[in-house]
Image 1 (cartoon, rainbow over the protein chains, first blue to last red):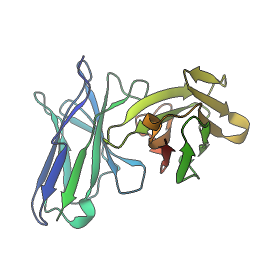
Image 2: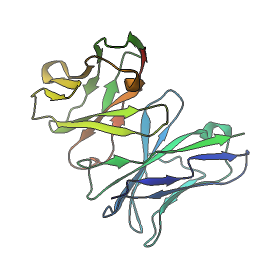
Image 3: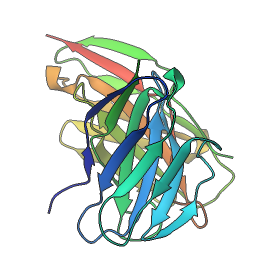
Image 4: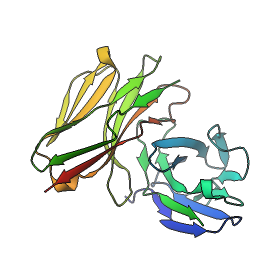
Amino acid sequence: NAGVMQNPRHLVRRRGQEARLRCSPMKGHSHVYWYRQLPEEGLKFMVYLQKENIIDESGMPKERFSAEFPKEGPSILRIQQVVRGDSAAYFCASSPNRGNEKLFFGSGTQLSVL
Amino acid sequence: AQKVTQAQTEISVVEKEDVTLDCVYETRDTTYYLFWYKQPPSGELVFLIRRNSFDEQNEISGRYSWNFQKSTSSFNFTITASQVVDSAVYFCALGVSGAGSYQLTFGKGTKLSVIP
């Protein structure tokens, strides 16, 4: 049973470009969560999605950030017009049910904005 | 609101020494869950343990052990006979029951360096 798959592992963007981060949850998991880890900080919750629905986006910045989890395919975290402050590691987690009982994280995408 | 404090930013030990990583949490919820994750230099987050608030039994898994003390709101992690492969950043995290249970609150992490 493959784990949570995130790609790319590393993404370099110039200021003003768009970044698209992908996350494929574990098989059988329909709940996806995105977290952001700023340098020397713990992970911070961004958004919780189920298939085709955003359940809670209370941790998402109000502008430039969006997330989706379509019926088919991976979940996408999209950052438009990136700025240097967006440089961070972005982790995706998935679970079979709502909640934290079985919450598995991917290896993360390290976004670097030049 | 939830809060997790890992007061030790960095710890260095010599191989084979025991080391304890501290974690103090704050929550008003009576049902909650505590986690430890390991983040090796490669960057992935490795799940180590999940403990619920009703279970104060200490847990041992090989060289790892966890001491949960509700009276002091602490969930400390001890590595016995440390090895170089234990070098990593260790995160303590808190999750609550019910609405919002999917939001884990993480501490800032403790970077452990095990010197051969």
